[in-house]
Length: 423
Image (cartoon, rainbow, N blue to C red):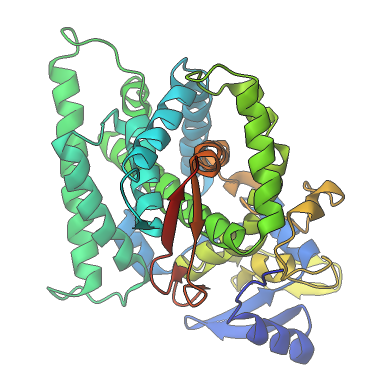
C-alpha cells in the first residue's frame, strides 16, 4: 500500500513531542499561538468574526488585491461570500452545467488518442482551467482571451509564494503586473457586455450574474472573478494529479474504481451524458477523493497562503490566548494525527466506509464562514474526469515521479503517464 510523502511531518511530530498540541511561537514578527489540536482548530473556524479575525501576511494583499474575498473580513467578506454561494447555486441549476464539465473532460482525453505519454499535471491544469473559465467568463479554449489569461494567471500564482520585493523582474513584481493585466482584460469584457447588453443573447456564466449585483463595485467584481479562477483551478488540478498518481500504485483501488464507473456506464446509452443521479452513485470515487483532501488539500493551501487569525480575546479549555496575538491552526496536523486516524499516512479509500466524514477532525474545505463555496464543483470535476479516464486508458508512472510538499505541492517530473488505450 502506497504511503504519503510528508517532508513536514517530522517537524510537526517534534513540535508535538516538545510542546504539545498547542504552543507559543513568534512568526512574522508577531507573538503567535500554533495549534495542532482538533478542538481548538474547530473552535477558531466557528468563531471567526466573533473571537478571531482572519488575516494573511501583507504581501498577499498586494497580489490578491484589497477587495479579494480571501483577505476581506467582517461585513465585506460576508457580502462577497453570500454572492459566491448564490452564484454556485445558480450555476449548479443550469441545464448544461454537468454537460459542460463532461464535454471538456472528453475533449482533453480525446487529444491523448495518438499519444504514448502525457505530463498529467499539465493536462489536469488545462482541464480545470478550461472548466472554470467557461463557468466564470463563458470563454472556450479557442477564445484568444483564454490563453492570454492562462499565461498571466500562471505568473500571478508563482508570485504568491515569492519574497515581497517589488523590483522589476522579481516574481512578486511580475505577479502584481500579471494581476493588473488580468484585471484589465476582465474589465474590458465587462464593458463590452454592458455596451452590447441589448443586442447579445443572455449568457449564464458568473460574470453575467455579477453584472446584476448592484451592491458590488467593478473592482469587487474583478477581484471576485480572480478569486473564482484561483479557487477553481490550481487546487483542483493538484487533487486530480494526486488521485491518479496513487491509483497507479494501488491496483485493487483502481479496479474497484473501474468497476464502479463501468456499472454506471452500463446503465446508459453509449453517448449519454452523466447526470446528478450518476454522480450520487460514485460512492467509492468520493472515498478516493476524500483520502487526498485528508492529506494534501489543506497542506497545499497552508504552504501557499499562510492563514493566521488575530485573537480578539479567547479562553478555551485550559488555553488563554491574549488579545492581539496571532493564531495559526495547522489542519493537516489533525488530518495526520495517528491518535485520531488509523493508518493516517496510508492511501486507504475504504477508511471512509466506517469513519465519520463530517467531524472536527476532518476539515478539507475549511469551516465556518471560510468554508470553500466551490467545493462541489471540485468534486464534480474530479469524478467526471475519472469516469472517462479509467474507461478509456490504462497507465503507468515512474517510481521516482513523486509529489513533494515544499515550497508547494508538485511532482518531480510533472507526473508522466505512459498510456495504453483500453480495447
